[in-house]
Image 1 (spheres, rainbow, N blue to C red):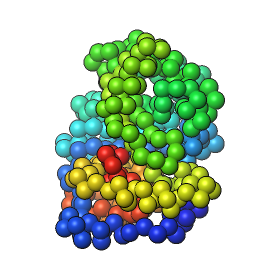
Image 2: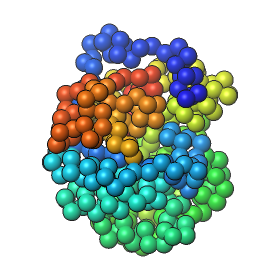
Image 3: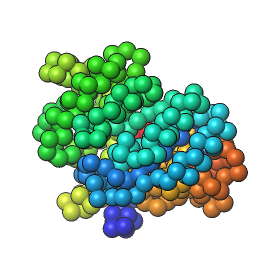
Image 4: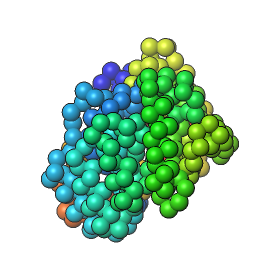
Length: 324
């Protein structure tokens, strides 16, 4: 809660008013195309940038009835083509395999937000093969191609385990064939990510040359000024400056493509939010009668047309090249 309160104290222009002054319509939900599900907060890592504050000590996890309800709603929402599963380390949660199998049976594409290191942990020896067999695409966090920068954010030993996992995934066809392997870069400090295509070329050259690793695409995302990252900025006296950077880097073209317009986010307890950043700050679906998966009558399409709750951290998704 401390990081939320600290952000509330920062002097930031009201986003809704700013959009109105620019004659930009306030974003509202479209027919959903992507369902993002956080299956729980247990994780083998405790990364400094993690906006949901996952760690090995967190025990929150999705129950079977919630997973079943999500699959029922997914089956009744043909507009949703992709299920994006995150955590924590999603692979550590019982609901993960249930959702993967259920969604794939429906013909829905599944993305696994994988931290890579989990594939090297005891008890997870089967996981890479399971993902490949189910045809799950992987979006993997690798904040740099150098050991020092990765371990500064994510802890000692993380880089080597990440490399081992990427090599293992390559042998299973990820990044080299029909199975998609994308990497995610996020800045190691209070600055915006660089231009994506140039950094992708550098990543590909370095990982291929140093480790023989191939992958499909690199996504550059902006660090949201909430939770652990907000705490870090607050301690450095840099929170106001970072928010000023986000506001001054506003790109109106991002309004049309922000993820919350066509995405539904569901937390491990069934709570519906505009995005996982909102959920982390307990800013849930603003329409109380549709606040959980158990409140919806039959389909996620019931959320289409509902307003999006704009917050101060939303400037992050609209800055520079965007963070969606």
